[in-house]
Image (cartoon, rainbow, N blue to C red; front, side, top):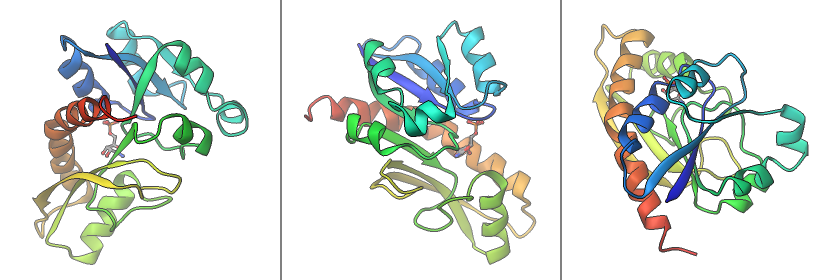
Length: 193
Ligand code: GRF
């Protein structure tokens, strides 16, 4: 079994889709749900699914061992970020080379970087008058929303779209694609050192 830890800060709809997709998977398991917020919706999902949870301590995450020891003890081999708002520390990236992926609710390299999350992204896309937006799944490196792109999918932005209606379209794209793309990347990563 390849064990995945899902890191999330919010409601966790993507985490739920990942849990559903891998629930009966023969070789990939969601082992742990990690959050930086003790009241995040994603933790309730984890409890309902009887998946162990971990709430990160800021000091330990950024200035301690970045939870490398705890994750290896649990046998975690891959990390999936699903709406996780803290920057991933270098120590964790070093321990999981090409084994951390993120999903971003826009077509990177546009609309990425610090502070570009949730409705801030969608509002910027609408303000710029872009005809389309989409999602980007990418490897995580030491800069926000920056690592090599694995997959993108697009949707149209209508002139009547608001941040909320665009967010709905983006969520749909995320839910339809993230679990399958994670599965592919995890399977590929098994053959890499
Ligand atoms: C998603 O749109 C994801 O792209 C982003 O944060 C949102 C998380 O939504 N970075 P949810 O918590 O999975 O519902």
